[in-house]
Image (cartoon, rainbow, N blue to C red; front, side, top):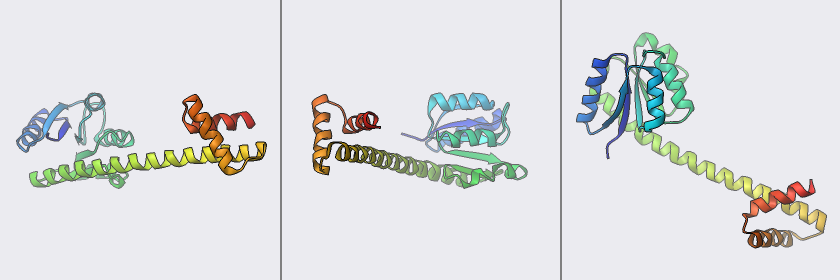
Length: 189
């Protein structure tokens, strides 16, 4: 399946030309618009793999749209900008899911940038999910350890006995150990 793209440009002619070019290169243009707010609506309902945005659109500037999409981590953004507008994109240039390309640009450069952005964004999102899972697992372990410490102090249990007690209650009640641990912490604090 091809890369799904939403295009935002204040010039309908350029938008259509860009759409044809992308389609000829195996991509699927799932939406285009000349209005910045409409672009954000389309992105939030169509979930594209990539957004290509012009620096000036009706209602919003390209850097405002780019900042919004990058902050929400919706998808990667390629902004087609004039050299005179580049200063508005300085902060965005530090973002991994953003690429600013100064107009005019070559077709090959645009295609290579698109491929790189989509590939990079998938890797970044996968890594972010892994980090979140590891962090969640660590947080749960800390909560369970805190509950064990409380049981060890209040009930004079060994660490193994405290762990077995949490584990037994978890199985008896059909709840995750972390929920039992949270209850213990609330009860004794």
